[in-house]
Amino acid sequence: MEKKPIVLSGIRPTGNLHLGNYFGAVKNFVKMQETNECYFFIADYHSLTTHPKPKDLQANVRQVLVEYLAAGLDPEKSTLYLQSDIPETTELYLFLNMNAYMGELQKVTTFKEKARKQPENINAGLLTYPSLMAADILIHRSHMVPVGKDQEQHLEMTRTFAKRFNRMYKTDLFPIPKAFNFGEQLVKIPGLDGSGKMGKSEGEGNAIFLNDDPKTLRKKVMRAVSDSGPTEMNQEKPEAIQNLFTLLDVVSKPDVVEYFNDQYNNCNIRYGDLKKQLAEDMIAFTEPFRERIIEISADQDYITKVMDMGAEKARISAQATTRLAREIIGFRKIY
Ligand code: TRP
Image (cartoon, rainbow, N blue to C red; front, side, top):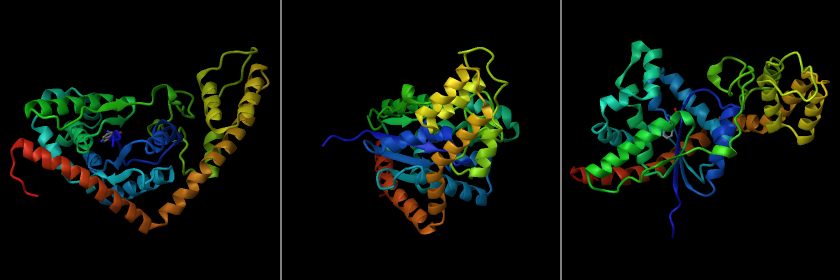
């Protein structure tokens, strides 16, 4: 039987899922579960670089898990787990660190940025973030890693570390993983603040979260940036207006989009009406997610079962890899 490609991605346990995350990543994870052997995990080891309080860490991990389940990740189809439930990852991280050089780690963009932003907390975990990420990926000998553009440099380092290990020990233990971004088929979801993409760091009100209640959602949409309207027929749309139309495109029916487009092109558009429609269509779109989030969140037994199941499946694959790595490196067999 031919083996399915192994797909893996890590999810930072910060904040709630917004429409940008959903269309940019989660929706595609959900699709990939059908045809690949998928591993999706919550990167809670990584989050220690910012020293979270244990209570906050736990609550964040739980919330992220609940929302990904609500969005369609299926623990029967994928292996869904917490990174910290697979301590084998830390052993591989140590092995990889022995061949990760200070110079190359210091050159990583995310490290430089973090170091600039938090000069009081430039810890070794921050510096070696790329080797931990490489361990996450290589522990399951993954082939494909769906990630955003911002993670491509990290993935390039994973490839470097994998090749280095393979070369050093004359082995082919690690497949060289490929970054996978969904390219053309990805709709970029803009934020509500007039420019750029939807993100949670762009300030209050820029992002629509899957678990926003209707009142919050209406308020955010009604406050979205627009302008005083077109002055000429068929005028090109400025960014803020194009953004509203892009959002309409993903949640509204085609005839609704066409209606407002015509209104815009005839200079009759009332942005208040467009926003009201957009808000109602977003409420309808997010409602099933909101309901599932509430339902799953109330079911602690189910959440525990999902975490246990994921940990068990992920450890089988992780242990197989560290066992081989230990042997290749020249350590004694201990299990
Ligand atoms: N660094 C990723 C992010 O910030 C999260 C992550 C950790 C990850 N380990 C990973 C992503 C392994 C893909 C594969 O979003």
